[in-house]
Amino acid sequence: MDVEKTIEFILNMQANAEVEMQKIREAQAQSDAREEARAKAQAVALAAQAEAQAAAQAAQTTALAAHAQALAAQREAQAAALATQAEAQAIRAADHERSMADHDTRMAEHERTMAEQERILDRIDKRLDRAVRLAIRDARNERKRRQQANAEWDLKITQLAAAQLETEEKLRGFIDSMRRGGNGSH
Image (cartoon, rainbow, N blue to C red; front, side, top):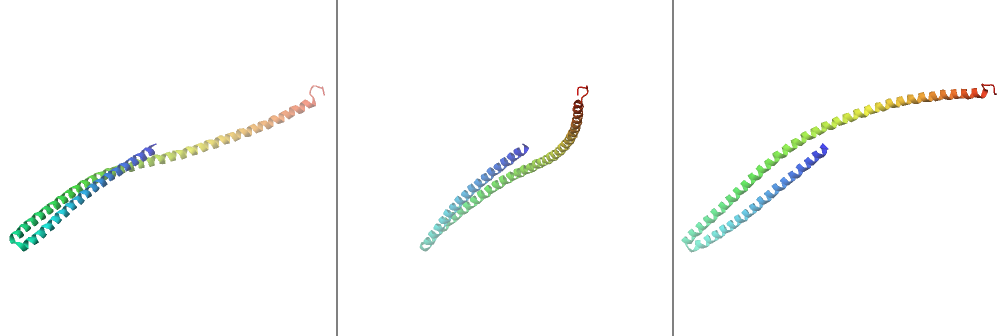
């Protein structure tokens, strides 16, 4: 009965671990989706940067003022792209730290659970060993009792057979004495 409870406990713990692993995978998928969105935003920012550079080159041929404006637009686009990239990295790092902390917590709980399972299995092993020893001792004692009972039975049968032979001999003697006649009628 303890083995069944232990197995059920182990299966429950395994199911819980699988659920926890699924949560970690989902969190990782969400993090990957955010990373992809940030990469797209960065691509848009880089595209904007490229457009600003193209505009700057076109303006450079026409006037020095247009060139200055294009450089300013380029710097703004770069700053925005760097800010977006830094924000994406910070979010990614925070997500990673949370995931790792959650993973560490779950691993510690799993290790505690596994240690407890080992202790339970050790106790079960000891109980099973003791039960086997007791069953062997019981079987040996029962075999001895049966052998003693069989020996006693054989002795009683032998005694009964001897008594039967003696009874038969006495009966023959009685019958023979009755044939010879004891009262003078024969």
